[in-house]
Length: 447
Image 1: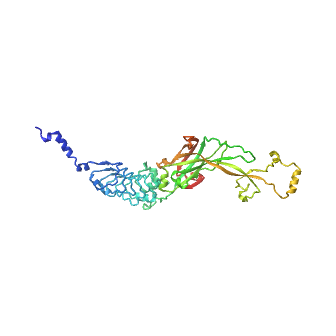
Image 2: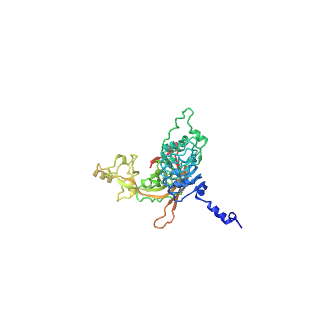
Image 3: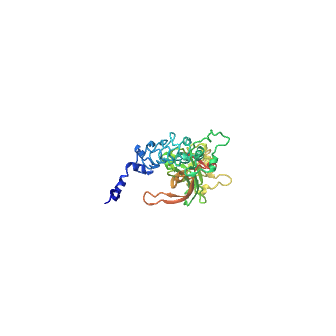
């Protein structure tokens, strides 16, 4: 006869009965509850008394009370939730890493971290104030690893240098090691009192240098010869750009001056600076592209009589330097009764013709009217466009460059179902150009 202890079924039941709530709560040391729709972490969570690591990434948490967790927790992930402020984690006296990236935190002024904290992920939030952020982080005595990538303040030119100067124990910033040279370049001079902080942090605008270098493959435009004495039409090309996040603010700006088409060379090389304020909107602009649009302008010459009643000012008349008139196109009107060649021929040596004498006698003091031509835009149209992604700048790159296809959109009538390649543009976009590059820019735009 077998005893109860030797019965396998009873042994199995005994093992199941051992899995009490107390056993389960004490068993877990690491717990991952990712994308579970969790809104609140209540005080029942404290029952996980041996928990060392907790991941609540991708949930719906608006507020977080760290006192509902065991104070022995070492790693806490609250990334990609709905947090508007930094949680108070001062009660977690063993916390080594806190991940609160990709929330909607716009200030850490009231952040009360654990003194043991060594690693902090704040990337992808809405932090704009570099001075405030750096001063708060300076109060974390053992901070060694920090991520602030994808915050608006990340795009401030002095961002990295300022953060490294404020945090003497920092070894990794935005997944990049802080080198010895980098540390020494931001160190406080030996003759400076330790109580004096390094050079002050100055907030700046985000500067983007847009450079157009070369365009190839553009087909020659059609220019019909004139049927009279007026100059032929002129065709010019120029680029304009827009940033998608600012599309509702009339953000189209010129990237190059109009250049008249010539068969030999069409040089559209140009560079401009775009200044963006340190805002969430500016940061979000890097999620989309910069759109470069190629425009074509056709200029025609319209005849205007010099004696007409237009009452032109001196600055608008031919030869003053600001004239829209074609000076080379000035000519006498052709008489209907005489061939054009004869009308254009100079008078014979020795004086005017008899007919001219009679005309002079009849109209003494009256000046013969001359035809002048004013040049004006008769048609402006978008030829093609290219999009340059700004995401690499959001992820840490300083320059985006390459050869980009300028394409004409598919026609609405269905004649063309795919975009048409018009030309290829070599261009680059650089974050925070050098002083020399800024000086070489033709224009500066503030959006």
